[in-house]
Length: 229
Image 1: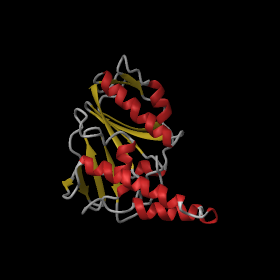
Image 2: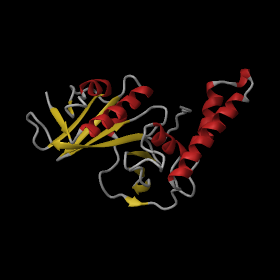
Image 3: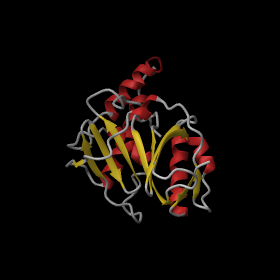
Image 4: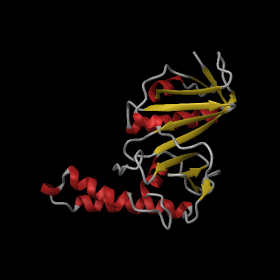
């Protein structure tokens, strides 16, 4: 079995927290792992948001058994979480699973260019809060006979597909970043400033804790889901 040696206990705890949040939205979640050198990228797709979530984990050394160049495999998020040993700062790579379609549509590794117009962290948090409040208010005001899945989807599509400020980033991407622990209050140590980048049809909201990627203008991760959590 391949054992990943994480840089320290904090990296192990952050990986476990990310996997736990993914499993909150999908108990059968899969993640794609890609590693080279001392960096491990963990890709997940929380279905409520229709985005890709990317958590980069620092490794103390690449691998323990037999892998000396790269790792690229799709595994069960639950099995990976079960293997994380925070005290030892290790994680065992579970057996490969047949990945869902999204695992074959990942954003590029390079070619990212900064995009202007992204509001600061406080404004992004306020935007998510206002959007959640609007969704709840509009759904609460629906007569019971009109509170159908189609009606709820329509309200969600209207709210969560709106652009953030003057950017092309949909509000749902910011909501996903906040819900997955990537977008934290500015007062927290290390919170840092989020940045927005583009590469081809992809947009990427990047923070010190992880990234949210959305594919725009084509097939793939451009559809909209609803979440008020």
